[in-house]
Length: 76
Image 1: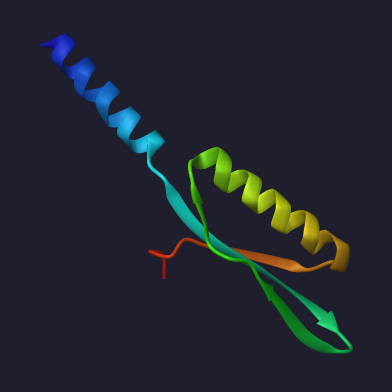
Image 2: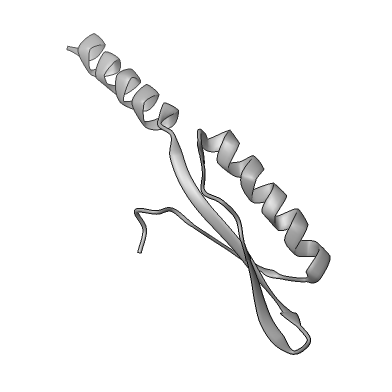
């Protein structure tokens, strides 16, 4: 029984952590006193891919002192 439970937990972990996730990010900054937003295309991939995508957006946003927003399409 213990082996069966371990097997199920391992399968669950593999499925959960190997799933591709998608996210869309944008950043907003003031330009001439007006809010301007730069939208990035949706990125999909594993956890590391999404983290790299967010790092790129945050690096771009840091140039303008922007506020970054990232959302998953299934999150409202």
